[in-house]
Amino acid sequence: MAPQPKMPRSWRAETKPHKFCPGCGHGIILKFLGEAIDELEIHDKVVFGCDIGCSLLSWDFFNLDSVQTHHGRTIPVMTGIKRARPELICIAYMGDGGGYSIGAQHMVAAAARNEKITAILANNTQYAMTGGQMAPTTLPGQKTETSPYGRDPEVTGYPLQGPEMVSAITPDGAYVARSSIGNLRQLKAALKKALENQINGNGFSFVEALSSCPTNWRTNAKDTWSFIENEMSKQFKVGEIKAPGAVQGEVG
Amino acid sequence: MSEKTIQEEKRVFMTGNEVVAWAAIAAKADIMYGYPITPQNEIMHYWTRLAPKYNKTFLQTEDELSAGFTTVGGVMAGRKAFTATAGPGNTLMQEPMSMAEMMRLPTVVVIQQRGGPSTATVIYSQQEVTLTTLGGNGEGMRIVYSTANHQELYDYTIKAFNTAWKYRFPTFVLGDGYQAKMREPLTMYKPEERGVQIIEPQAFVGLAGVPGRDRPPAHHRNTYNLEEELYEKVSHDMAEFERIAPEVAEFQAENTDDAELVVVGHGVVFRAVREAVNNLREQGHKVGYFRPVTLRPLPVQQIKELSAGVSKILVVESAYGQLARLFKEVAYGGTAEITHLFRPGIGITATEVEVRVKGLLETGLRKPRLRKASVG
Ligand SMILES: Cc1ncc(C[n+]2csc(CCOP(=O)(O)OP(=O)(O)O)c2C)c(N)n1
Ligand code: SF4
Image (cartoon, rainbow over all chains, first blue to last red; front, side, top):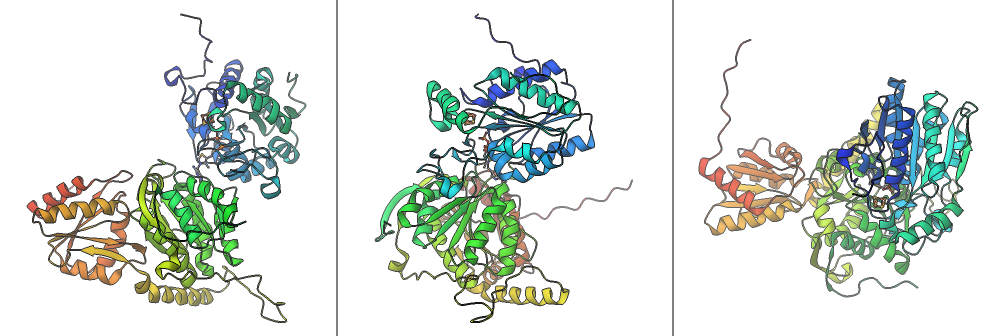
């Protein structure tokens, strides 16, 4: 048998292969999240929360205590846990619909309060689970089920710059970055730093990851990558946006 | 350039969600506000495709609280605004709909029920009856049509706009996942061709003239400082709701006059009920059916007569007694024994109903035996 890539230890082997579509970005983000958890050896302290949306398919993804909650409500559920048990490491995992649309008020409030949780958001420019409708992150001109003639910013605005918004409203101590499944080293470093920031008790940590949805984009492998690397990353600049002094090191 | 809506009767074969979008166009709806949730998504998908062709508009809001409140705003502006949702979205929709209830706003909401509680399944159920009829804080002054097939989705979506604008109570079309997603034939028509006059909307704000000079300003509120004031307002609206109830309430019944047992069901479950009852009649059993088409207000007089006239009633629903609770409240005082077949969140076949009815006819309805209370 050909050698298989190693699964992170925090993954739950029994639930693999996972339930995401082939080529989906969610699986990639969760792989590097798993590795970051392994390396930080926080397995026994993590509570993993996922939203409704394709992220919910990760409800039994890890060998971690996990909570799957309502659409847009992952941040408050994790906030509730963290405030009751500050020693736990709480991760809120969601899509752009859950974080920037229905749950935007929670994102704003948690960021402003500098809640000491880690929020990770997969930005695939649309609502995947419900069948490809427009999201706050849909690119201008992009066709979706509810922008069948292409998103017109005159009517529905421009794509929301989530990390920039969170960066602007968080007090000191917050960690904010945008990553991409097109840049795995940077993605992993950002996820790890976002967790370290929580471990150090600094403040809100937020990573947006540019992610793929070949199913709803109706793209083949080549076009999927091209969309992420050429279209999405033009609109959404990848990199670290805010980091407290306490967090050392480069995000490469 | 805008295309003309349906001009002549047309036989079509389409999904329920598509039917709703076309019916809203036929009812001269102006604008849809919505947030994606299965199984109603395609109402938005079809509406957004049709909208520019008919000079209609659409806004995808950030959640259902917003979809409900923008609908409220659209209605206040004098446009025929509507929205559609399901399940947890219906839960969020209750806050704006409570406001619509207090302000007497003709909002229209299409609900395609999914499983519950909470997020549950995205497929089907009849578990949003309580929420849709009585959700929100307040007295549940709403009108709720429960449809059973695609023709009714078309008819009652059109009717919902007229009912809402005539009586000014929030009006709901209660469908479900099966109706939303399956294909079925129906006839689409221009309402006027069938003598249905489409009621024109009227603005609540932004009226002509300068307020304070040409006309009094339009003041709408849903907050009251004094208990007595609120009491008067709610009593007045409730009296009006009760006054119009017999006019609004609709039902369907057959073979109830000589029946020993009457089966009650609504929505798509009624299709199984009717088939079962027809089969049982053919086999010589004295059974009938009764179906409330409006779940709010219920056809009170007919239910009272029914529960005083037959000896047994079987309530069948894909929920754990949401219809039965409403039904029993009205039937209270009647002599009929009421029993049930509850299958929360799953479909019910005619055969299941038949088997159950036969069982009841053979054994009669046994009253539960009282156990002696044990001490200790
Ligand atoms: C209150 C409520 N409204 C709507 C939905 C339906 N819903 C389920 S997933 C989803 C969109 C998810 O999109 P996103 O958050 O971007 O995640 P993705 O699926 O793209 O990963 C919606 C609208 C719901 N479950 N609850
Ligand atoms: S629909 Fe898109 S986001 Fe959802 S699992 Fe499939 S590829 Fe991933």
